[in-house]
Image (cartoon, rainbow, N blue to C red):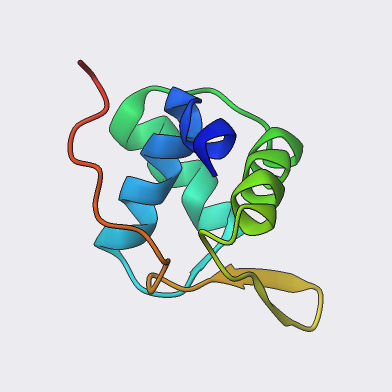
Length: 83
């Protein structure tokens, strides 16, 4: 779990998941670009989500070909990751 939380990008992703319920991968990408200026591909974010899922910090739910990540991730909101 500590390995998953060691990366600042994954902490930002967790914070975004805590702010809004049931986000699809595309929406998380948009929120990271617009809200944090992070220019990551969907594939890169998907890899980060896999690390978080393997650490048992999030659950990824599939609806057809779309992955949805519920906001009820199993972490305490980490606060601002900018400092």
